[in-house]
Picture: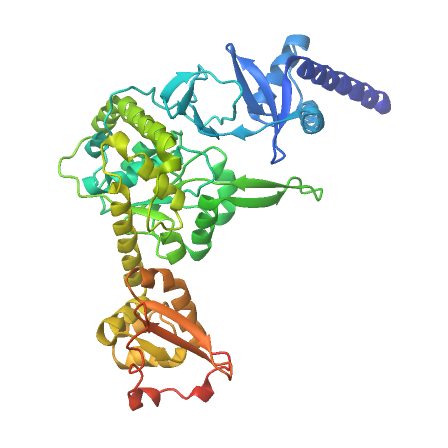
Length: 508
């Protein structure tokens, strides 16, 4: 009897799954992308929509068809069979397409998914922008993505200063960063770091920025672990994080990779050796009470904005009512800048570019849309980077000691461990800093600190290099661009006697 029940159950299960698979293949088109993800295109309210095959939304679609045909609910086991089969169909029979989230760029045309119910797509080219439909661009959405403002012409980007309390000299920096997030070319994105005293409106400012370029039900997220970034990034074009206290070295490295473009491999199923590689490239925005990025490699990829104290307080409701009223024209002004950048990008030349060369050119190419001089962005950007690097040196006890030494003596030439003793002997470091965990105590520690601080030190005119002599011992040189003045730096016999070279490791 038990065997008969089992056979009947299996037959019913097979019939239900076969019926739903046949319906899905006859009603819908299936696709896959270069990352191995599978998609199905369905029609909702007269508009075509691209869903992940294993999404809850497509699962609901299958439940609906099962109820229409049988007037019964769909069991979990049958649904899993249907979905796994259709995923295989998508991979092996479906057309391979390029998918986009929120922004797509094809040559010199940018498409923006508004995420509204009408499936409006904004097309931006060198001639301007317009709202329409473009089914040839495959956009994916998540349930957390919200719709952008409907853009209006005639706006002025200076209206942002009414809502985001930054100095007007920093407006080109914010505008340039936003414009770079709205393109989907090959250039690296930047991290936007917003800092200010408590009550300066950091979180609100970041949510407003996000609403103009990538609105989401959860616009700002808690500080993540590096391993969580892949999951977090799935529903966001711009990753926004709230209330940072510090950025760990691991997270700093992760942010650097993501703004440039990172490939992550992970297991698909714990029961198999199957894996897939996902490419992640996203703009990042954080806010903190004090300037958060302190590592030189991340600073060189960061635009830092300081919010001023709010003089006239508004309620949260009043602030958002005013912003929402202005948002359509502010968004329209950004689209004007985007079109201008597309028009001028290939002919724009910029001197003294950093590793964010594409951002520098893109923002400069858009300058005329806002009535700015061509040098406006770069002038503000260079000053911003120099200040950030100076702050990074100040934040490091070892870096600050090097700066104190440089200002007093103009350089150093000698062994790494002698450098530590020299800094301590001449009191270029305070007792409190010397006893902190950040202070270098070994030759290796001194060299590691100098290597990490090198870009920030060079930004304020202090140059460093190291070399090995014939006995494989490491020496460091610290000086100006030409390394002048270092010869006399370790001439004090008392300092030289503090360290015996034989006590150091051969390599250092």
